[in-house]
Amino acid sequence: RPSTHLIEAPAGSGKTLIAVKLVADNLRASLETGSDSPALLLAHTRGLQKHLLCELKDELLSNAPEAEELRPGLAALRMDGLVAFVATVDALAVECAGETAQTEAEVAAALRAYGGEVRGVGLAVVDEGHHVFARQPNAALSGQTRFADAARVRQLLAACLA
Image 1 (cartoon, rainbow, N blue to C red):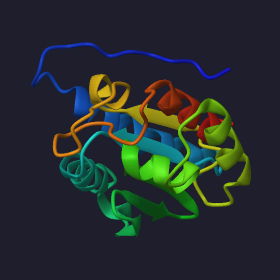
Image 2: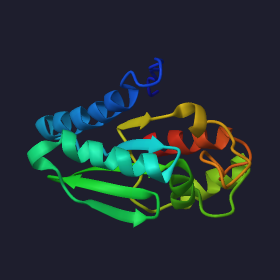
Image 3: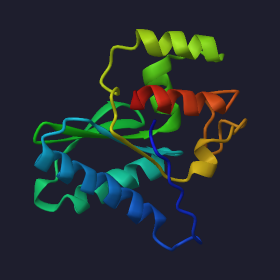
């Protein structure tokens, strides 16, 4: 069972930087150990997703790859056979569960049928989790708008980590 850790600190204290460093360190450790498990960095907005991509590339320094956009809001950074996905929760939901799945059973069926890359994730880091794991009913505002029941986000992440 995956372990979970919560970093709680005031705004501006560096939580996002810690998230980026965790993913970068995971990629470096994977290179040393020969692991090929992808990492996932999840955000609630496209703006934050793009910021996280830039920060991750900067953190990787000379090994900084170019980001490959798989779909709007979902990008992959590839480095020496490893991959880090940086995504918004809504883009990840559409990628893995499709446009219409809503119930636990529908999402589970969609995840079983999913044949894409975002599987077997060894590390998932969620930035701004209070936006990711809560339903934002107004699609014009930032946050998780895809699922009526925010519990589907945890179901989605659990499937990515399996």
